[in-house]
Length: 212
Image 1 (cartoon, rainbow, N blue to C red):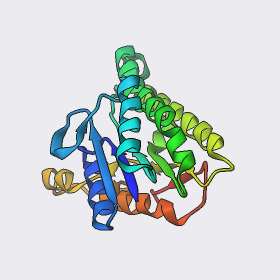
Image 2 (cartoon, rainbow, N blue to C red):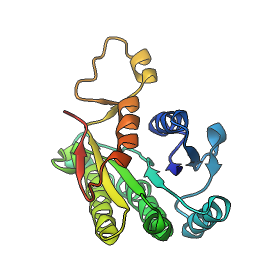
Image 3 (cartoon, rainbow, N blue to C red):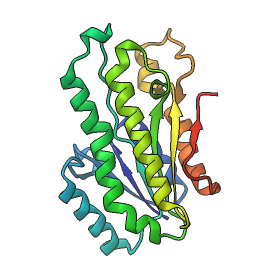
């Protein structure tokens, strides 16, 4: 399969690329930084994202999956201390990049024999705390956009789903805090396994809870 992973230079992206590549898939890693051999694409530039989709189609003729793992977090101690510039930043990272990739890749996913799209969301979208107002609002908006995208894919072999976590953990975090247990966190390798499992289900427009 031909699978695009955005945010591929982050811990979750690296785990997804590693898992999918080990399974024999052709993975196109995309990251703003261009680190670790990824394609350097600014996902806030709609034309650059449209060019990415065109380039993937020209080189591979199709796409079988698009996994959007661009993330970010900003928070505050209290609701009143929330910074609107943080809300704007999170909207760009979590919503605007999502809008650009889904709009650009929709035709390719619809044309795929079994196209899969997914984002990672957080429990904070369901019940945000006061200090997570900006983050929870951005995640909720990203979920709404993804569910609308899922509706657009109805009647095609493609699906769009939401993978829900409390938070993610990776080996670097464990090494930095060896006494911390990270209760309820989802390991990035478990997330990668859930991503690969998307091709084993026809579910569309669902919130798949990985916290249980």
